[in-house]
Image (cartoon, rainbow, N blue to C red; front, side, top):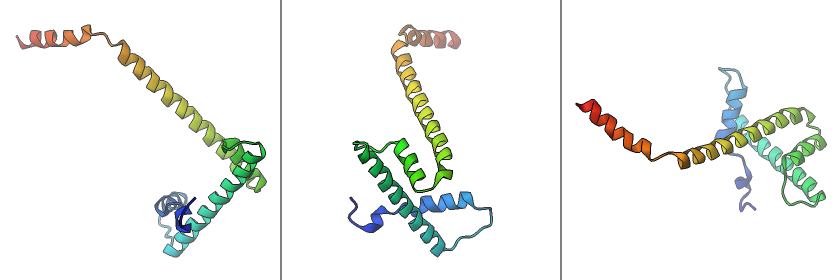
Length: 130
């Protein structure tokens, strides 16, 4: 657990960047408003985490999963966030799977690299130098 309550806050720079991305250009936000939104976002995330954890515990699990978070959003009456979150979760899973596959392919390709290719390069350089 956090030693100080401030440790539970979301990073102000991240929240500020999200706010700037969501607002039209030329829209200014006061420091006080940024702090208020940052604190509200932190409270929302902590509450959502608490609700998700409660659902995981009801299912006799110690690990919170995506389905717990989506169910918690529904319980908290934030249904409008469920579909975008499901899409983002599926996109994340797909990217992670592709990343894992490409890493495996890279490892397989490096194991299959024949030694003959390495010896051909110096010969080609010698031929081009004449």
